[in-house]
Image 1 (cartoon, rainbow over the protein chains, first blue to last red):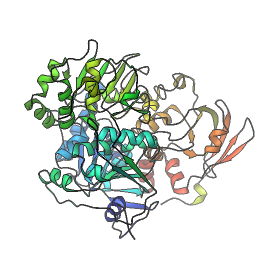
Image 2 (tube, helix red, strand yellow; image 1 turned 180 degrees about the horizontal axis):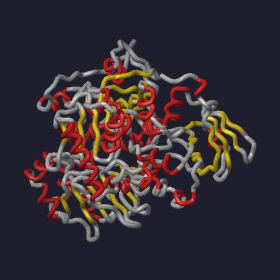
Image 3 (cartoon, rainbow over the protein chains, first blue to last red; image 1 turned 90 degrees about the vertical axis):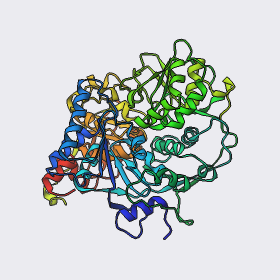
Length: 424
Length: 174
């Protein structure tokens, strides 16, 4: 029977020759992830089960990144639970402040997640690793606890939606714009319980960072996972990182899809999602005059080096508009160092920006740039739900890094073309 | 996996309905600003406050929620069903649930049912009765009844035991 990449991956991890959508399978997990918000509950649940050791100390990964460096006493206590559990269980992959970064940027960068893996994480943006051709999906803390104890979890095999992208990307149009455009067309539950498979000539030319951005937001369409077919771009990314074997899966030509959607990008401009839903998408030229109080460039969606490069190329020699707070958050220590070496920090600081240590911070209204009543931010993050970045009467607009940077300079929601800057 | 049927008393809930719209996300159910704590009682105080600031003050234990499609979308935080359950919400009926929330609800022992008809036929403040075993939902104010897909027995057992972990401890299997 012909199968999709998602079906093949689940079949192999369940020890089956083939699987079909709707089938329940019990599958072996390659990597299980938790963070400082979700792991404390998972650890308590794990302890209740009464198993002494995690199933594999190399495959349970804990990253304090949401409210770390500790934002308050309660966060400190949650991080302490991760630290003590990691020590007690001798976890290979526990990342202390200084080595820690935003989990979904950090794990691929360290070669911890690889093509062909089955990854679960107690964080909905675990779907990011689909960019590598892995099956990766978010779960709750109790499911993480069950996996920490047994190394296995049940899954319903999802139907797949094939998303074909053709045409040439216009300047300043990247992975964020492709995925926002797609969510705008599908809606926030358009892929509920399904796999989104991203293919097409535009995808084959799409850099790795942009693929991570797209897979990251598959959950914003309700998907179980988002996935790319590994190719030479994937190979180049993993070959200097992998320390264990990995496998490239691809969909059979006759695999069955629930739906096939095609997007031609020739005429697509940078996209934004207006409050309060990631499906409330417009082209940047259609937004009118919307003032902003803050611009945030970072997160598991867009805190990678190419995102910071894009922001730097807009902000070079410019200043954030008076009254606009510009916050830059490199997603991992190595991205931080690379941005510093490339001179981006001088550009950001000269523009009046502030550079945060790697953290999820303001994205989920934690700290490092929380919004007050009536304030509005443009952010390169992934969610603009009510109260997501702070006060329940604040607003978040989602965009790519070039739009966030241009908006910071102009003090209102705007694209880089208004500043007359050409993309390198 | 489960005990004999004689121990399986039907799970029936009766209470007042609070209604919410489509795509109620987990940031609305429990805002992330409270996630520096995982204590169910403190989480319950802030339950649904981004959607209806009076909910947590006015709802009575045993009340139910009826909501539109994609309830529980967004983050994977298990704090969402934990907060709802700790607040005393007895059952949630939605047109559909987001998939991570669906798993988390059973795992934490929060009963949920899917029925578009019921959601359409129930107003805020109505008193309803829900039978998990049959999936029957009765609006006691209008006399109308609705049929949701019943919760299968093994999943009802997880709910009865208070969630997946107590279920594993008690019965020795997931």
